[in-house]
Image (cartoon, rainbow, N blue to C red; front, side, top):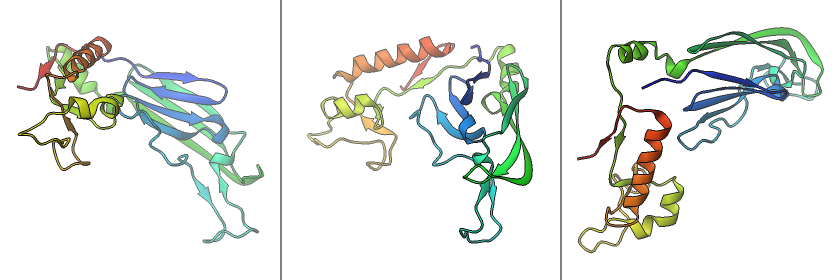
Length: 211
């Protein structure tokens, strides 16, 4: 299995550090703060409720006479790629804290962001070089509740036990990994298509199914 390199893509308004599995976005309109973190093969939606930023206020409680100063309000912040390789990317952001109005405080900052491949898979790369193989595990019965297929076909594809018409989950309903599907339904063809897509996209060394 070949592990793809880290990628760094920059436009006027954003810088993205990404792999096939996750993506981090630095927003140039927000002082190059991290504005989004997404797991691309999961829900692929922003995990943050707001930008990751630093700020200070003169008083513990904000009052009109004392605005909040933050790096996310710094419209003149500068982003630089310090170094980049297949396994590591280092970024540096410099500027001065600013109020929402754009007025700067006499407080300069420097923030360094370092990204490693998949949490640092240097050891895994060495294992692969010495013959280790990686195969994914496929469940034949479970369909995750967040998928479009679940929303469209779960009732029709569900596995029925002894006349129980309820949709059954691997654990307590609403908390389990997925609903139990019947292989003698349209779920079978859907599963085959998903397995083919995973193996084609990720260059695994094979696959393993549930027994």
